[in-house]
Length: 465
Image (cartoon, rainbow, N blue to C red; front, side, top):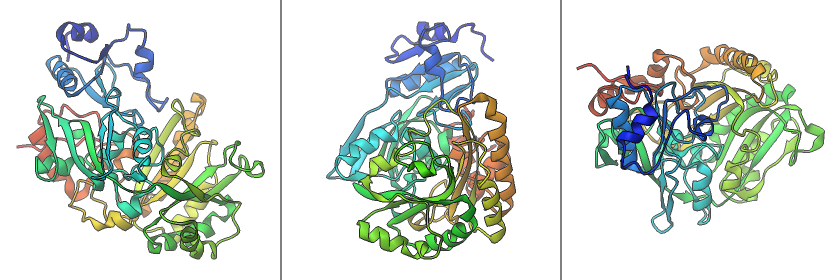
């Protein structure tokens, strides 16, 4: 337990060479600096260390350790459980680390640890290139990557971690190391899915792929057709060409363009598509599904830049909404699960709430469960149930719906979940999400963070000696 009254004042006194900003509760920009994406999270750190580089990160870690202060790491601040902040401790804020360096000849991009995917997609898109990421471009690169990275390009190019080439990371002892397949290989294995348990990543280098203009957008059906559509979709997507990615969803249609006024606020099921190729190729790829389901309410597939598809949900989900989510990995969707989806997916509690099932087959299956920390290489979907609303008065409603949906389907799940989409659900849940990889992760944790300094996360506890 710390004995200092004002960590912010102490940091200003002690950290003379700090190049970034040291922000405390009495500073005028504290309110904005402490705010995270999920407005359900209300925490007041004693110090926010907005770091300008690896040396600042090292200094902030050392300060927190000397004064026995809890330490959290903030990248894009999107974490649903609020694991990028803490109460009364130190937050390492990476938002100043925003450099993006594209090498189109080598087909790589080096990305600062505080970047969002919008910044990366914009820079790589100028060259018709991209690396797999998520589906909301305001998401931070660091958090999404360290947890695995599932999105529009997964079936063709794998998870984000499958395209990570190297990282620069500041360890718990203040040492800065470069890690890749040759240097600190155990650490490189662990950060590919093991979350922020092993240090603070100040830069990432990713492999890039062709992904300039894609054929993307939603197909919506009436929610009443959900059981029929999902029954066809579950058989279709696994045999579709890898160039086609499509996640199944339940949503309420936003009352705004580009959606036709006739379906505004309509509860729908749908598939959000991303196809790498021509319009003709996309039509051919989805034809087997379309010929076997009812007429859709909307067919919104069209050519657009990959970066635009990545940002399609940004306007619907700005920072400041209340969020509660649950998640599971899924191998199969039996008829009983289809019935649960049809019932609870059609009962969305608020306009912004929803359910997504992201396919994680295709290229993601090219790796074995032990190739990276992410162990569910045999799963076919990552499902997430999200209760969302801007009004705090609805927090309990959206939470109860998400939990009910999740618990009703959990018996049909693979057992664990994508750690980026978990709340604070306990140690057993964390262990289940890493399966047989957990013990190796715990040994690596002991080697690189034996005191569990980095524990504000889906925590992997250091193995005992």
